[in-house]
Image (cartoon, one colour):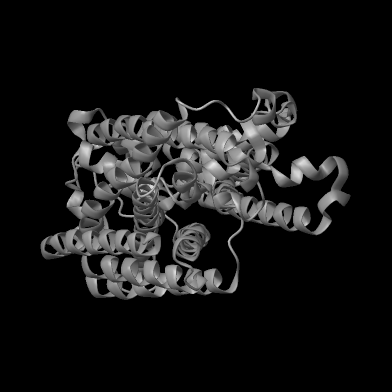
Amino acid sequence: MTVALALGAVLLVLAATIVLGGMGVRLSRTTGDFFVASRSVRPVWNASAISGEYLSAGTFLGLSGLVLLVGADGFWFPIGYAAGYLLLLLFVAAPLRRSGAYTIPDFIEARLDSRAVRRVTSLLVIVIGWLYIVPQLHGAALTLQVVANLPAWVGAVVVAVVVSGLVAAGGMRAITVVQAMQYWVKLLALMIPAVLMLMVLADREPTLEPLQTFPVELGPAATDPYSTVSLMIALLLGTIGLPHVLVRFYTSPDGGSARRTTVLVVVMIGLFYAVSGTLALIARVAAPDLAQAGVADTVVLALPSRILPEPIGMIVTAIVVAGAFAAFLATSSGLVVSLAGVISQDVFDGSVRSFRLSAVLCVIVPLAVALLTGPEALVSSVGTVFLVAATSLTPVILLGVWWRGLTARGSMAGMLVGALTVGASIIASAVLGADAGGLAPLLVQPAAWAIPLVTAVIVLVSRLDRRGAPVRADRYLTRLHLPERHDEVG
């Protein structure tokens, strides 16, 4: 019965995704529809869609598992994820919308007047997107494996096929409707079990003493200050460099709408993290035995049947499974549509036909990686993506918006140094392990020193660049920062 309900919930979410996506497909005709939904998505709708794609497998499944494993340190992740949107609101949301760009490479090329920098940016966007898609496919595989005992490849293939087909058929306009719906599905899928379990637990005597539930060795006293600060820097700045997040601001009608959208996103994802964090605390009380690497990510799926009586437990588990699949589909859709836009313009001719072909092609590599690898800790996997984005793309985007002196050579040097630095740190950390000694925190969490290094490289090389900033830099920056009434809607 549990398996049938879980599979029924998955099929219901897939059916709703296809039906709503089909509604958007009928409205998708022009290139603008496919790339940025013709810049016509209003704040509430856009905020729901952004929240839908932003709250990924790492949040839906991984947060509770992380708190179960590491205690209070796990809550730094949702704080960083949510606070990152405050930086988006303050520094880039409205200027990026005013840029008139379709993609991040579009913005970088227009700002720096350089095809070479555009190619490097496009490569980084694709790599970041692929790295982010893989955990979504792993999460789908893990979910169906746990609740229905299906082979791991089934969940990954189902998500890849549905997402690539939906994006290819209708582009941004189609997935906007789907992602907005999926945010509310995800929120309710965690809120319903959280409320029911709290009601049940309120009438029970605690089975563990508080010090056993929240031991000192997993509390704030055990927090490594450097690692915590470095993690927060990566999460805060990494949000600015995520291609699937930034591309949604291009769908707003104007800069003011982009700002209002961002404020609503902070509220929506904050609400979701509050519910998800509540489940994490319930897990530490009710399922401490699941605090094992490779098992903890399944705790949200296991909790309802542990605490709630049957058949309520089975029904609520099915609801959670539906929310999990909504998370995989929403985030994957946003990533694929952002990558398809980049590949379509940089590899093909930027037409609707090439966009559709790109949507299928950009799923192949992450699907192959997901099928050949096992799911690691989902939150940590997503954290790595934020780190790569924060060190390679974010400094260039921020300086591109706010510093006239930025040059193409400085940007290229910074992006390459950032990508190589993070790559070397990840490899060194994996190879050295415990042998790294005092260097271990610096290698595991390099953001605190890598981002200042990259920024210094960009500024130094730009200062030494005899070509200087593009001639039209002043005019372009004026466009980015003009008051709202002068917005160019293009």
